[in-house]
Every structure is written in C-alpha cells, then in structure tokens.
Amino acid sequence: MAYADNRIIGTARVLFDGICNAYVVDVWTFTPYRRHGIASTMMRLLLDELQGQHICLFTDTLNFYKKLGFTKGETCMEKVIGKWLVNTSVTQS
Image (cartoon, rainbow, N blue to C red):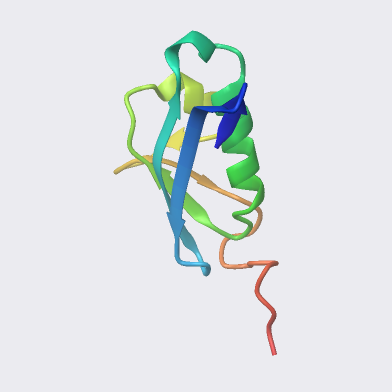
C-alpha cells in the first residue's frame, strides 16, 4: 500500500504459490496521485519479492507494464523474475 497524509493512495496485490507462479491481482492509485510513479514503485517492490516466479497479469494498460519489463504472452502480460523455478527465499535441504 502507498500512503500520503495517513490515507491510502495506492494498492497493489499479488497472489503466488511461493514456488513458480504469480498473478498480479490489481494495481490501483487514487486519481489525484496518478502519474507520480506510485504504481511503478509499488510494482517494483512486489517484483523484488518474486524471485524465480513466472508472473502473469491481465490488463489493457499494456504500455505501463511493458515499461516494467512485461511482454505480451499468449494468455496474459508476463514476466519471469530471475531464473524461473529458482526461488531464493525457499531453503532447500
């Protein structure tokens, strides 16, 4: 979440299995705060936590996500963070 003056001005959510697949559910910025880099910052923070994940999202704002490194796949906008299936946050024994 993004805050300004103790009020929420942006949210971004992702669902992921912790192994290899993630889905960006929604990204929202309160209208008066749009075009100030808030959504980009929220997305970068989410993406930093998704090493080894294939990320998928459905959107009609393609250019925004292309700037974040997403490409248009067969079914969704997609991006792989790091090496797919190599999750650095999971301890392997």
